[in-house]
Image 1: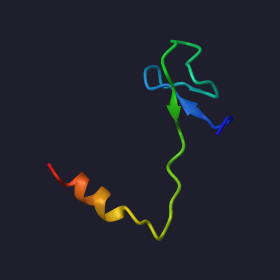
Image 2: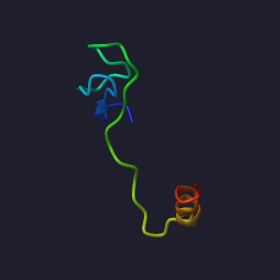
Image 3: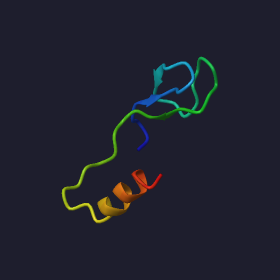
Image 4: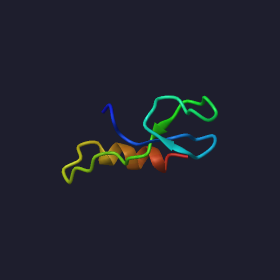
Length: 52
């Protein structure tokens, strides 16, 4: 999505840009993943989480 809120992992500032205007680090999306009650891959994610 083009206009979702993004967060800089370095300086913890929020922006709409792909790159942080303060420190020029790559930003990440601040929104959680979409939830689906009939998640087909939940079993695999849980197994991978507790694999170690």
